[in-house]
Length: 265
Length: 289
Image 1 (cartoon, rainbow over the protein chains, first blue to last red):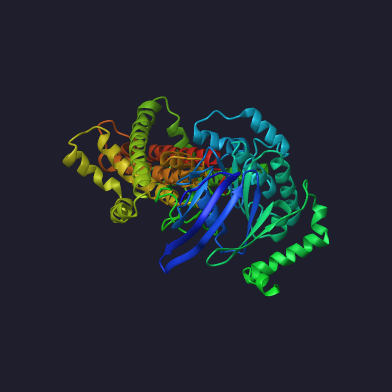
Image 2 (image 1 turned 30 degrees about the vertical axis):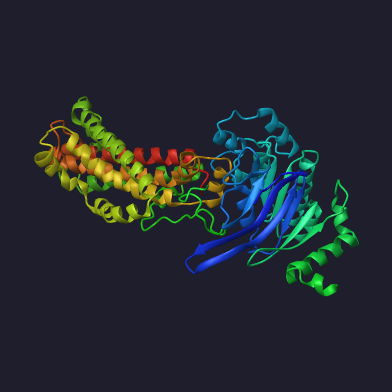
């Protein structure tokens, strides 16, 4: 199959299938999943736990190989980690507890054997409200601040693509709203492509240009929603009737695996 | 593609965060002793020491106990501060210290390297395990006469150095291996996503993750090493002597105050080793607790 990156497609997933071999047999995590992510787009992958969201993200990042199917990034097949283009943000903050914030932020530079971009880090630290905490260790900071630091760590690499794996799942609702706003603010105008995995419907709608709903076991594409909300987005938008209606619609899709759409018609 | 030993092709699960299993032998209590902080606590500790010291002195004086039966605390202190301190104790402390430090350096380095290697290969680990258990459980000071007369045919400090290595190395090995067996999938994935090599993952993720257990290994290993050095000297000292040799020497002369002084020096040496590693742990592994 020939994969092209024409008409602004940044990431192309074709027939992605992943089967994990376990002691009790194969676990079918992802089944014939295809998706195009456009350059500069923020796509949320939404689904219940065990629907292969994280599997998909790990395949996109090149950390795990697919059983079948292909993934290409900027027209190049993904066969392994692509540190120059991809930045990953993990569940929880995934900071190294033996390093202070600054050392954590500089970690990718060390791995890449590059001098740390002091000005870029300084700008991001200011923008995320972490100024003054550079010398603190992760355990001394709140979950929200740890996750900010992990965002700074990824963004300081100036990645073209940001893969985010339920990054705010462990945070309380208020902090989560705050982090979502911060993410949108950092992303706006950056031209970065973001694939954001979440199981929170409201969060997905609030952030995304498109919400991709997946079904569990095996993880299949249920439906893609285009989100027409204007940008910049505000928390108030989440109280609008349209927004709440969309939450209910997506919730039905998640529960029925997308089949209710057929029934309605 | 992701290295098989680092990111196994399994369902990414973050349920089990860094596994803090300590294996069959859990020595981590050594690093987590509660220490006194307030003036009251420290004052009380000093008071207890004073009560024991002067209480013992009082009892021994009142009962007119002979010095060769039980030396008075003041006699022990007097026996320690003598003008030929170097000849009686200092030189021997230096000999014991050399045996201990060289032995620990060799043994712990080998133990550390072996731990890093065997934990990478489960097959090798299973084959090596029974031999390590034999090494851990055998009192190595029993080997000193054999090493001196049979194997090395030497009156130098080296047979004892070898025994100290054999006593401390396996202790470092089993604890370090426990540390290296800790796997934190998310942290390894993080490093891999930035293109880290296997060596970079070892140096920047696996080693720091194992460091608290490595320090525990050094602590236990050094306690066993000191025991072996002193015990080895008691059994079969080098022509240089050593604190263990002095213990036997003074005992045979029934100079119990001098025996007490040597015991005091050994005790202080043991405590300083413990404190050293405790402070190292506080400085380099305080993130875990």
